[in-house]
Image (cartoon, rainbow, N blue to C red; front, side, top):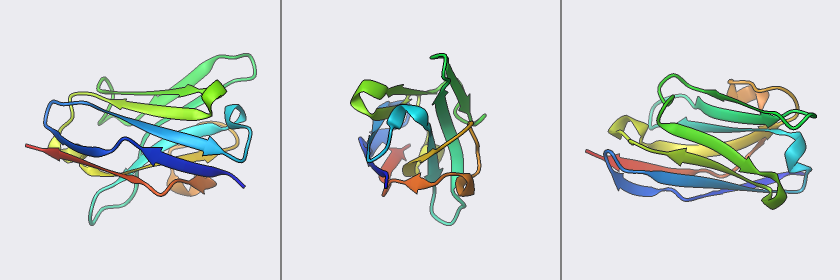
Amino acid sequence: QAQLTESGGGLVQAGGSLRLSCAASGRTFSSYTMGWFRQAPGKEREFVAAIRRSQTGVYYTDYADSVKGRFTISRDNAQNTGYLQMNSLKPEDTAVYYCASRLGDIKTMPFEYDYWGQGTQVTVSS
């Protein structure tokens, strides 16, 4: 049974930065795709970014168009931790951010992920 725990959320002014962390336990972290999603009040949960390491050690990433060039996803398999570096934050980035994992290729729909963290709140003030 995998467990994911997010941290690093908070309140930041527009244009600022935050780095979210996702600590994983209970499964072989390096074998799984890790994704970040977010959910704003009254809206559906949406894909933000995902990262996968191939068997040959190549890392693949994917980003939502709304965060490309501003957010960077990464992972430290030795520490069983994933990260989401968020720069140039905008008020519309305000949401609860969740990390999730799945076995297999990068997917962008929430239902395709098996395990979820409890979420961390990110609030961007204008």
